[in-house]
Length: 109
Image (cartoon, rainbow, N blue to C red; front, top):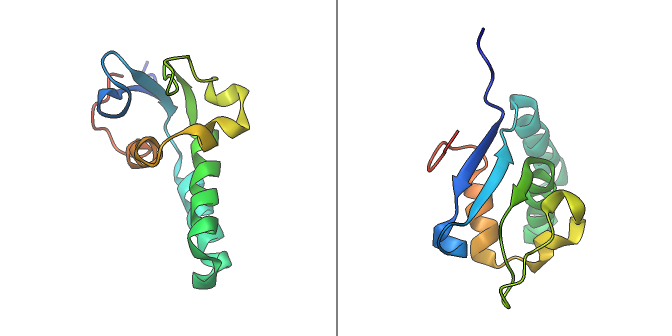
C-alpha cells in the first residue's frame, strides 16, 4: 500500500551550518491557493509587510521542527511552540524556508 510522504527533512547548512535541518509538511494545493487568494484580496497597495505576514502564516502552518540555533548558539524554540520565533530569523533564513516550502531540493524523505 502506498504511503504519502507528507513531511520532508531539508538540510539547511547554507543558513544554519553543518548538520542543521528543518522538517516541513508539504503544502496541499488548497494551502497555496488560499495564500494566493489572500494576497490577491489585499491588492497591490497592501505592500511588502502584508506579503511578509502572509508568508509567515504559511511557514507557521508548515514548518514543523528544526535543530536551529540563535546568534549565541542556543537552540531556537520549535516553530510549533512559538509564533514569534519566525521574527527572530534572519532574512536569509526566512528566504530559505520560503523557497523550500514547495520544492524537492535537498529533500531527505
